[in-house]
Length: 96
Image (spheres, rainbow, N blue to C red):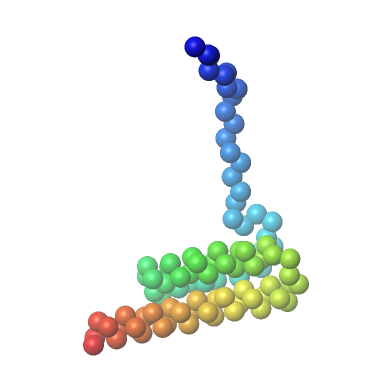
């Protein structure tokens, strides 16, 4: 029977923080879609979280600053439009 190999000390995995390496304005624009949480509850929070993740990916992309700002604001606007459409559809379905 063979022996099990000896394992060395276990080191914890390095955790990468979501906002590491972002400028303050990028963090603000990334968090902007989360404002839907206060307006739309769980649906708004879910859409806002999705928008935040997309904005962080945009902020970390190799784009010019003006392009990042425009894309991040566009994501915020798109999230609001999707929320309004979903809210309208749900309202219509409930109220008939």
